[in-house]
Length: 475
Image 1 (tube, helix red, strand yellow):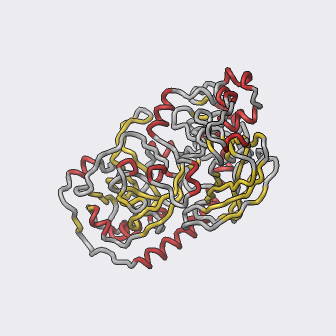
Image 2 (tube, helix red, strand yellow):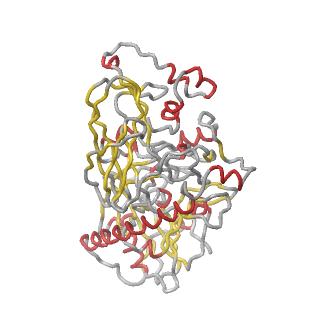
Image 3 (tube, helix red, strand yellow):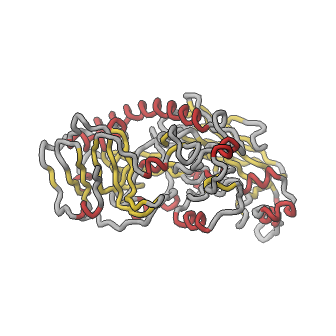
C-alpha cells in the first residue's frame, strides 16, 4: 500500500474538487455530531481501560515478571539519577507543561507540552495542500482556505502524551522522553469536522482504515519514515475528530503542527498527527511503526499488545508555595493554604478528587468544579491547614464510571513505560522563614538527595527522596 509523501503533495499545483458538491452542514449539526461522538467515546474509554489493566495492570503483570521474560533486556533502567545524554537531549527538545499553570483554565500555547519526534517542518500555509485519496469516490486536494470555509468548532481538549508519567515507572524505558506527569496541556483547538470531509470524499464500501501522514520525516527503529498514524474508518467518522488550524485563537505555531494538524479529542497525543499532508482511506491492514510503538506491551514483541487509545482518569495539583531552584523543593509559610489543580477523564464525567497531605495514608475530598468542555478538564481545590514540618502532598481522581488512578507501586510495568496514573507527589516544607525576602534557608540536603551516591549523606528519608525525584516535573 502506497501512502502519500509531502513531496507528492507539493507537486499538486492547485486545489481540486472533482465530483459531488461540498456537503453543507450547519454549525449546529456539526456540534450535535460532536456531542454524540463524545458520549460514544466515553463508553469506549471505559472498555479500553479494562483492556489495558487486564494486560499490564499491576494485578496482571509486574516488573519482576518482565525480568523473567526478558532477562537480557538492556532498554530499561531502575535508576532515577542516571538519565542518559540521549534522554536529556530529547527532554530539551520536547518540553513539558509548567505545573504552576494548573491554576489556569486554558493552557498558554508556550506552556503546552510538545513531543516532536523528528524536526519541525517549515510549511507555507498559502500553498499547503492536504490530499485526501485512496478508496474514495473522489480524490480531494484541499487548501487551508477550503478547510477554513467549512463549519468551525472550537473545543477545549485536554491532551496528554502517551509517555505521561514514564519516570514514575521504576523500571523505565530510557530510549524515549523522560516525562514525569507534566506532558499535558488543555488548549482551545479550532478546526472543521474530519467526518464531514470524509463524507464528501465518499468512502467506498471496501474502506475500513484511514491513514494520516505528517510532513515530519526521520528514522526510528532503523526505518526511514514520515510520522504516520491511522484510525479505523469508524473512529474517523464518529464526529469528534477535527482538522485544526488554530490553537488558543491564533494560527498554529510551527512546533504545534502548522499549518494543519489532526486533533483526536480524548485520545493520547500521538493520535493527533501534526503537519498533516495526506489522508488515505484504505481497506485496512496497515500497521506502521508509530502504531506498533504506541501499544501497551509486556515485552518488546508482544502478540497481545493493547493499542493506546482513550485517556484514563487523572488529577494533578499546582505545586504550592515557591520552589528552590535546583531541587524544586516547595516552601510555604504555615497557615491555610488553598491547593489547586485540574482533573480529567477524557469524555467521561468526573465523580470526585481527593487530596492527601501524608503521602496517601489518608485522603480528604476536594471541591470539584465543572469541566471546561466535553474533552476538557475540571478545576478542583482543597483548603489545607498547614503547620511547620515536611510533607508529601498527593491527589487522585475518580470518574462516574468507577475508573480510578493506579496505586503507587515499584512493580508497575509496561514495556514502553506508557500511561502511568500513579498519584502525583509534591514535596513541601512548611517554614515561616520563606515569608521574609533576604532570609536564608538550608536546602542542601534536598539537593544532595538528587544523586544516589549522596542520598545517605543527605539524611532525607527514602520516601522524601522518592517524592522529590521519582517523577521530574511534579514539583
